[in-house]
Image 1: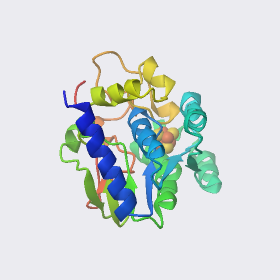
Image 2 (image 1 turned 135 degrees about the vertical axis):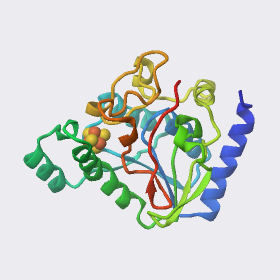
Image 3 (image 1 turned 90 degrees about the vertical axis):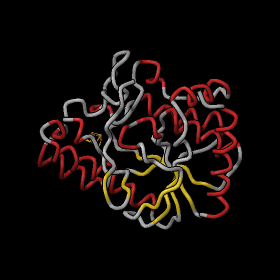
Image 4 (image 1 turned 30 degrees about the horizontal axis):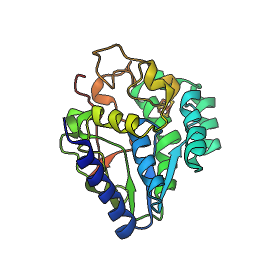
Length: 238
Ligand code: SF4
């Protein structure tokens, strides 16, 4: 297991460098465990990195409750970006509220409307963005770097937790009493929209609960691109 204090020091240095050299920069929080580690670091160090979340309109109550926990603990309001109401209404009217179960195309269109388009608005005008992605989350993230060029958004992208393991994340959360999403205690290692996420069994792939009805090769939401290509989410066995 990696030395947590070494990881924490390196991550804080990365965040400080982003704040100093890539301003304005924003952190895209999905309100999951990894994101809470970065939230804790950014807010405690009072770093000028904006924190936003994509409020898709389909999140669990437990996920939305994390916003209140952040406010209570740090006195900070996470900025929310929501989908365009007309686009959502048109999709629902033409296809049905839960049409994403019907085909990969319908699912990607829902993700495009509820996540990808709002992400573009959230990132506009910034020099860099920060994510909570970790290399160990996925076999196809073996090449995930702490710093990457996001050509799709024409900015630099940082993954400060790239070297962290899941154990490191939880060790930090426990050591610092960081608030987290209650779903993590109910069998949800990875959390997305409510209708597209289910709990997993012990030993099951950590992302098996995301878009579980699809072939693993199609599991992508369109948020993470490197060199203009979508990074597919194909998990390693837990
Ligand atoms: S995760 Fe599901 S509900 Fe959320 S935007 Fe994608 S398809 Fe729509």
